[in-house]
Amino acid sequence: QVQLVESGGGLVQGGGSTRLSCAASGSIFSINTMAWYRQAPGKQRELVATINSGGSTVYADSVKGRFIISRDNTKNTMYLQMNRLKPEDTAVYYCRQLPIGPWGQGTQVTVSS
Image (cartoon, rainbow, N blue to C red):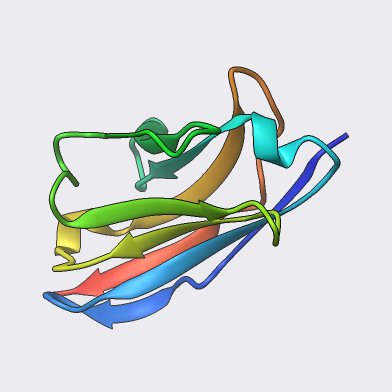
């Protein structure tokens, strides 16, 4: 029943920063682990980061030290702060509830060189 809407994508210069948001509608957001995924053209969708109900986080090696996943349970919203962006970060970014859940529509992030 949960619905997810990603936003915040756009064009950013390499080395810059931006923040993505994932707004969830549903009554059980606060107790679920949430995740950010991304999919580049011609590539399979990959896991970027997760955050559980207690705030513990896990990051893919490719983004560790640059991205920060967070959540605000009072707003039913998850965030992905993206710093020191690289062209290889260019992808459509999706949020999802784990271990199973629907996909949002995704938001495009394009990083110029």
